[in-house]
Length: 273
Image (cartoon, rainbow, N blue to C red; front, side, top):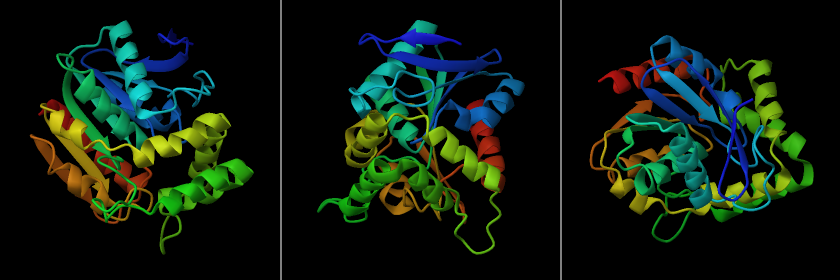
């Protein structure tokens, strides 16, 4: 399996399919590159070099105790891009991965990144503050940390319902999809899973968004129960110089079903355009 070793000795797993313009996909918490399996094939079939990595602590990458923060995530991504010498690059990030690619593009990606795409992404800031009253109360994130620490297996099983909107009337979410969320979550070591909550909820990425000077597509479901749209996409689009907001009515946080079909086609059109 292909790995790179970062400057601090962390092994980062990555997978790639296809050839052509590179498209780099960054997953959400607590998942891995396996969350992008459909897109890896779809984008490769469309003529792109599709690449996805496991964030440090997640999936098949090193089970890290340190560096579980947005600065280090972005630096890891930069080292992967530099090792593979990717140019004219499209970066795509879901949820926490959206924060990762935004920070990477803003702080490391000049001259390499051609377009940025996020879906259900955490920027600019998830946690509620006086300046961000639309944010989620810190108590919610404390609850996530407590749940992961007490019984992460059951916590991930319970979380999958809200993640995919399976708790909504009429929802059609397979047990297999929820089981795969649990499977990927169980690959994260506890320290990384715990620390990542602070990274995705308390990192202010206002300046990162303002620094992005390439075209950006900001996608978000308006029934996202994990990253509410009002504190995320609706604010982000006002901060980026050249951004397009695409709202998916009734779509949840997890990329699945009809939402996945529509999002993937919109991504391909945005890359081509």
